[in-house]
Length: 319
Image 1 (cartoon, rainbow, N blue to C red):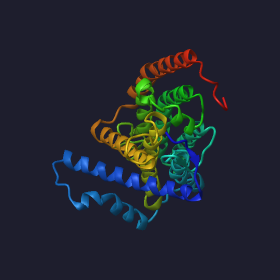
Image 2: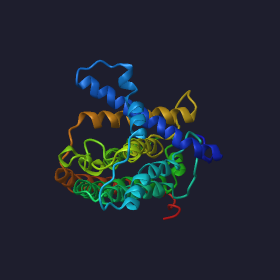
Image 3: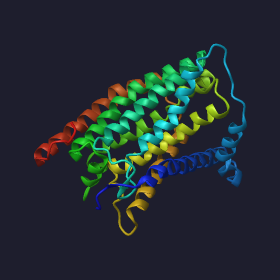
Image 4: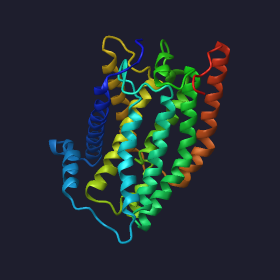
């Protein structure tokens, strides 16, 4: 397995482009699944629907609400896609990464927390009861998924002996972490759906609250929120590859292509779950998170820590 190295400037510029392509592909796949579920024919218009919707929102007039805090609302709106792109900067593409931070795993989690605050700001700033309810719903949801998510990341860092994403990739030479950290992997996938406020964890934008956080947004603002949702899902799918699936490791194909193939596979799985599982009630998800996910991820972290101690692994840099 070739070591991961800091790439040139063009790799930084490539990250948002790749994320956008993955997001559009995920949205198109979701449309295909919805069309099949409704018994409709899959045509070119179905596949092109995300691009058509983006074009429509670009020319749509922005909606304004009386006494809204525009600065707070638009800051939150912009931060959602920005946080997704910044989180993806530490994801290696084969043997090259846009940002080889020594604490890349912490950076990824920090950008998710930024997005958490951003969506709440977007809901609060509109001066709308529906946006406020949606924002607080996401905060409650975040409390339920963030701890299992953090424990999953801690488990990876413990197994790798490093907080670096490159270190996690190097530690999987011969055995991927998904094999002996399956609970952490499942918790990561669940949190990926939850942090992107997508189904089945989409109560923050539910129909019962007239769209929640999205209720008062139109035009470019709505496009940034909806696009940011897909960028977050794509970024999480991409991050699962170096954390659990060996990064660019694989036969015959170059490392960067294996990274893309694995990312597309994980993203496809997440979109399939998103389209097939009904919305989970917020109280049920909170109960599941605190009573099931947290104990299981703690147990997984303990088992990995015992294995690492038995191996006499070096201490983690930066911890």
